[in-house]
Image (cartoon, rainbow, N blue to C red):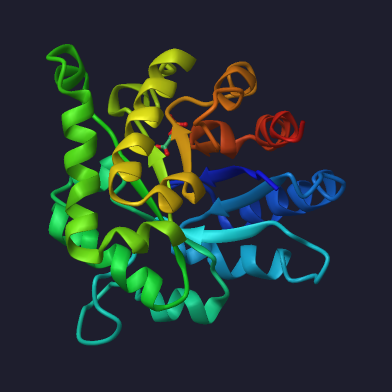
Length: 253
Ligand code: PGA
């Protein structure tokens, strides 16, 4: 079954009580959604245990993930969180290479290492790729996105991509209210899939490629309707329970 995946990226937002409240709402309101939709939220580390408790009932199929991870599994790395710890807590996903982290200096090599350590610990990396506005205006979108993808393939091998999710997130569309048009997004998703197919057709067919960048309940349907868009990585709109619930319901068709 083709599942549409909706992942909320809460970024550095929320309080403990807010996390508790929104999870109660999501668990209640999304209980009847079909298995055609995969749902997850990625809270700040400090809110993760609260979220994990809210999702602990066996019938609850919402999952959770982290927004980042350290490259190493253990050691003297003050202030860091390891994939082992995330796995121990019951996380499913780890967002890797988000543009907000790339902009803060995260290198392709570190991203590939994070991708690898995530998988080694049984978690699913959500690998973010995306171009800036200047790069798009210079016609460099495909080259930039494929270079970011190749950096991970080079370190981890093409087969590693089959147990991962790719999120195409044009930087100019993140948090700006400017969504890529469904056509613009579909073109890049197709290009990513074609590139993977040149290396391994099975991986290209099975990998989920989700879109992120100002996804909301108004544009979700058109985006999810595209042949190569398998869901959304939702930032701002995931902080509003009603919006996130609407997006999940739109994915359930
Ligand atoms: P946005 O963020 O939906 O607020 O644009 C998406 C993301 O950064 O993952």
